[in-house]
Length: 141
Image 1 (tube, rainbow, N blue to C red):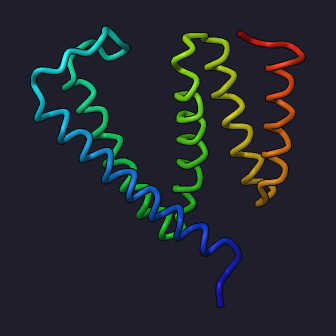
Image 2 (cartoon, rainbow, N blue to C red; image 1 turned 45 degrees about the horizontal axis):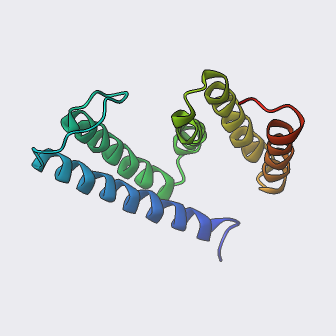
């Protein structure tokens, strides 16, 4: 008998594992190239810095995939924090510290809201309200 959310847990574990493997392949590629000149960015213009970052992220994603597959409570909390960090990362290119900080806070809030309700309706509704507020009522950027 399938417990509630079993299919989603399997999907999440597989998605995390595949994403981790892809990041490791990205890092292998980045370690092998030598003639790539990057614009000055957060980690500098050396592609090896990014290769190390993707290697570490890839390994962490694979470890999280195993934790999710085992229904670890630790994985649930790591998922909430990682989700908030990745959500903030999606806003990083704006360069607006207020927006990035708000993304971290909102990501944590929505993750905790899902953990408390075990349903996506409340986080989605909250996200829609937030989007309307920051895009139309009181824009942050």
